[in-house]
Image 1 (tube, one colour):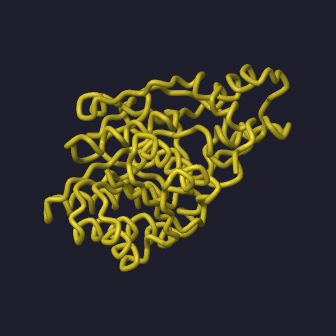
Image 2: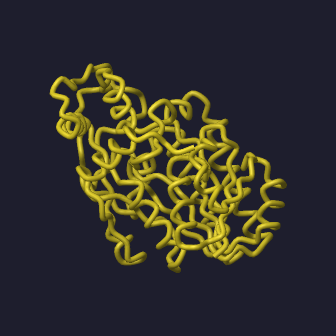
Length: 314
């Protein structure tokens, strides 16, 4: 298969690129390197991946690349993911997450791409949902511009499916964690806490630490993308674990794994736009994709810690 991965120099994207190459696919990466890192692709480029540095907001340049590559599938992971930045500048957030996605869809339409797998968000779209774990049928209640822009992008997938008959699917992720997540960038709490462990700093918890998330290991998210590319399912599909974990529990498990009894948190006021609880119902992923997570939180945290202590090959 010829695959094109937008955002392929990022945390999730680069792990997906490695998996595609490992099974023998031809892979082209599109990334503007604003948050993604070329170092994440060092091994992939040696193994034949082609990196094209461009901004997905440039629709003509993107369409030209898609036309030249002729991919069988586009995995669309390029996005603006910082919740606080999205609240501060929602128009900028929408320019990347909505306009950028439209450009991907236009390129796919113009060049007859057989399948597009769109990456989206579960918790940020559902908001403080009444039902936990939350199914895809729940009413969307975003509490930040990031969730609203990802929901709007999903709407354009539905439009292009209805108008043009494109084969499209959206994966709504829980809180993804694992190797290559940057503790200094737009990181999730696990990457930040691992960075604190490595540098001997105390972690900061915003709020009382009882807030929960559905933490899913990046290798399982990669598996969901591969399954979605091979399936015919459309519409949104949750990708998580159907398990809630509190921030306090994360601190406790990481302290145990690192044998760091003094790893205790500092507390600060809760931040605007952050949810109290989030957990995804993954029944549709099981039936529509034949997918379910294989790595539990404890094992995933151990793998993440081990990776953070291993020098990355150049």
